[in-house]
Image (cartoon, rainbow, N blue to C red; front, side, top):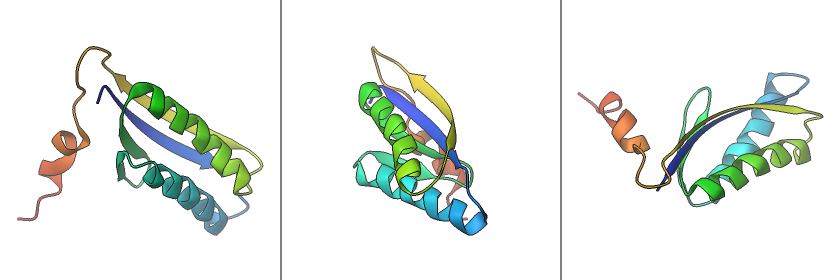
Length: 100
């Protein structure tokens, strides 16, 4: 795994329910890819091969439009290490989600 991406998809929507519906379709697509992902309140993180993740990022825009959004904006964060491994989602957040 040489890349980690965080994507926040912001579709244009007439109300909150429509916004959530479109974002849920994008999240369902991300989950369907089989890559490890983590859904947060503002963005979804996904980790894997850099080129595959860039294709997923691109497809997220298409998913939002096909779901009915007239336009979509996205904020993307990318960590890429061509010769090695990046920190995993697990290493980044596990300690913050353990039950006491």
